[in-house]
Image (cartoon, rainbow, N blue to C red; front, side):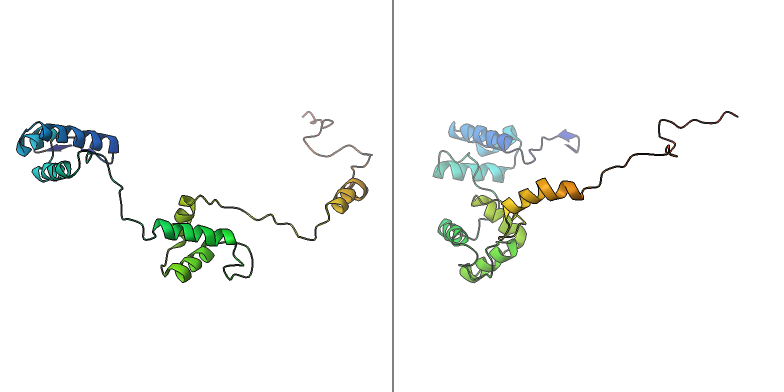
Length: 183
């Protein structure tokens, strides 16, 4: 990117490069180089170097990247409680069936923790807790596997249509016996 004829390097979400730049800048500050010189050398603003210096004085390992984004609203203890509630089952949580849906989990969170989350965020939260999506097997509880197997082996072959003997040739143009008349 060029601004007024001066080439500048942009570190766009390349976290390793940003971390390396912070580390190098903090090393320069530790050697006693002025903030203005470090800002010029690292091609950053003086305010950035000032933040680096304050962080370096508070913690020598401050060059490491902290967590990004807004912190989660649920504490670790609340997340563990949610996981226990989910493992106890949907019926135990007051739902008519054992099927957990994102909407049901959102209702549970709202009821138990007094927070409202979208289904998208509920899905992210469940993934963080180690849960995965499961599709219920669409089979009846009363299903008799032995009777099904017997039906497949005995009755189905009797009902299955079989191709009959062909008396006449096919009129299909894709059949073998088709010949085009010469003109």
